[in-house]
Image (cartoon, rainbow, N blue to C red; front, side):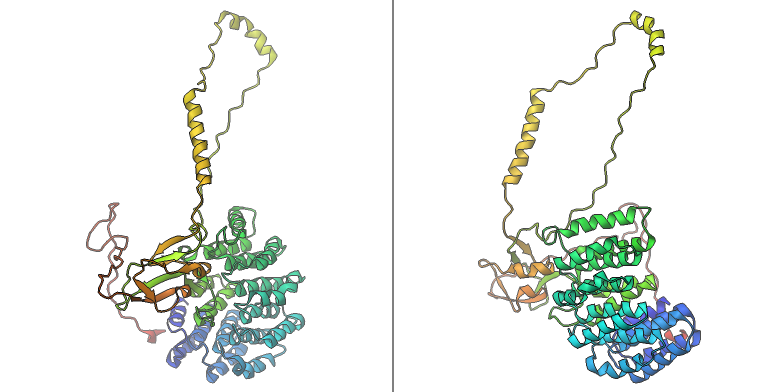
Length: 499
């Protein structure tokens, strides 16, 4: 099963017929549920956006022939990816799939194909068609997929998506509310859009556990890489995640959503964001397909790993004409704490319980009365009297606190090449007005890898020193802790003909 996934990911979007035939053979020969579902997804990954007619016919017919639900779901996902980005060209296939009125799995495939074919297009007519399916189709699965498809079609347009899905958050059907949450999360990914957060937060108290799960995942989509300064809701959301994960009475399905949400918020060491579009604003195929396959975790939890395809690094790396990193300073026109990493979690300190005095009966006191008279009076406990030194220490601490509050954080700061720059921070960047020896070929507000041109070729160029990667080198037999280094595997041959 893992083998077909690896092959599908390695050949993502290559449209290799040879690899497709190997995967098809795996599907036909074994006819096993788990490997068959993986093969169906892998075939779609390889032929994504190809509109391969023979592949469509073979996969569609096998959905109707097989009795395995898992294989049907895998082929449903694979068929939808064949039409990625094809827009109106996919309409003949969609009509064929919609003609199977009695087969829910075929109608689900049609809705998923609409989501992939029109992803990021913002087509209003397609959104209207999907809303009609949400209202009219008797299957809850079709309703859920149709609602999620709205998020794919309107990805990158939070306001429009919220206007179309706003009423669905109040729907009595939990599958529609789950779909509305995921759709809004996809459309508002990484934006921190406050209106979407206010819509999603009430769903955290929904009676259905899967709706709460969807709300947790959707909020993590929206709030990824946001701090208290950029979106104050993220602080309370992190507390909610921690509470959901640690509470023993919480439902398992909701806990799973909280764990996934925690992973998304802290993905890539908080150095990546989640987006279905590239830096030019165009739909990004790996991101769209990865998010689409990730959402199939509803049926198979292992598919959660596909969300990594939608992560995009948030950085600014300047290179010279020799593709090396020169020492460059960028100016960020905002406070350094505004886009800083969130503070690390603190372990709760154990509270020492005070000893309670044991109650003594009056009869016991009478018996021991004579003995107490004979004994000397007990000495008073020695207590440190407050001295001038303690008062002075407290005064110093209070003065330090006042001084820290009085010192205002600068309204700008400099960052060095290469730098971590989150998406909202890009618009605050500029080149220093004085002392800069380089000029960017493209605007640095674009982010990512930017080529720089030297203003004076005669001056000596300072380059960023290459950092030595951490860990144990293979030359030294032992590590710092005295543990021996594990030797790497020897080379071996691997053939796909046996699969």
